[in-house]
Image (cartoon, rainbow, N blue to C red; front, side, top):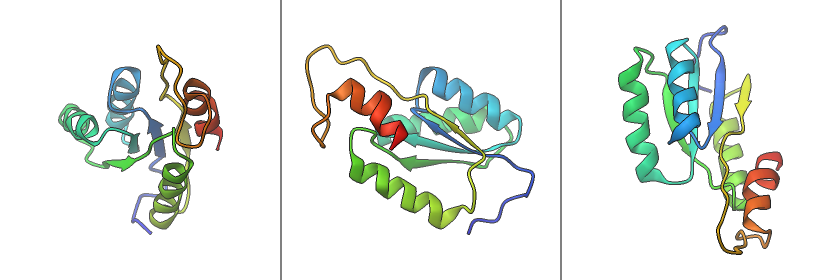
Length: 122
């Protein structure tokens, strides 16, 4: 288990590499929370974490890969998280998309429903 302060909130933010998710990560990092940025795109996540870390003296921010369009990725994320942490205080289901054309997730769900709803609830 990761050593963390008993009073430090552990917060997972999906889609934390841009927009509201990144702004939320910055704001909560400034308040001293341990932030797990759950992001699909590693390149964008790496750029975003630099911004989050530079905006706050809090260095307890990390990236964990998560693709909400893949049940396998969701399971892998959950396993990694449970190996490292003994609790989750806050889950911010921020990731979402609106595809222009019909697409399916790796598991055969319509993409918008799969990512925005099924993926988060799973």
